[in-house]
Length: 179
Image (tube, rainbow, N blue to C red; front, side, top):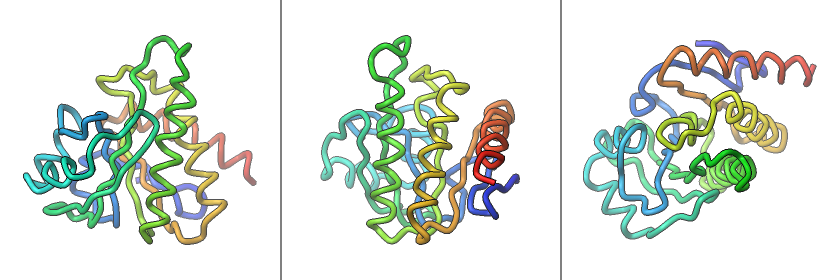
């Protein structure tokens, strides 16, 4: 585990469904119906109650986020964020990804969340290059931490070491700029 910004940001490699945080962010599809990757893992770990709750919430547009209970997860809440599918970068993908992070953080603060874990939204099957996505994620998190003392800890939970390395590099640059 690596920490940045006085321990308020952490990078871990592992299974987001096993983290002891107030909320985890799900890289959801707009139907909020479960699926593959992180989304499928979260739905499996939370149990069928999560899908039922998502159906009650309804759809979620790209760039937006919705919140449900965590059910069988350690996390009490799941924030479902819909990132963009990468299509070369000319279809507002960076702005939509930033919006997904920003809306997730806003919802977390509104819900009283103090600790939250993010996967690398849109970088799996949605194809967003991690080298472009990580700086967007870090910028949004650093801004939210600067604006809110309520958020005590934000975890970037990466599935593989190579993704964590990209986040480490971006965070080292970001923390050097804030000092």
